[in-house]
Length: 83
Image (cartoon, rainbow, N blue to C red; front, top):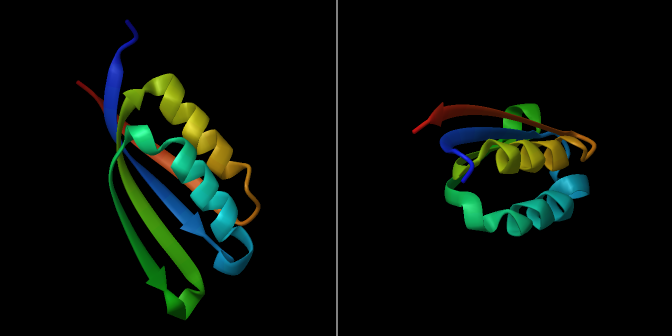
């Protein structure tokens, strides 16, 4: 069995109107590894920031952030704590 990790994924969205449906599609596809989610609009900079708490294998988390990062206008980074 592959080792699981608990981590945080930070997602920064530059143009919500163009990317929201694509981001939500990826979030839904990986919904089973998401423990919690918080989203904050940053109107002054026209950004939206989402933080996710996840519990998954490092391969799953890498695939998740990779798919998010392929969406134009979206940046996704993760930090993990192996348990």
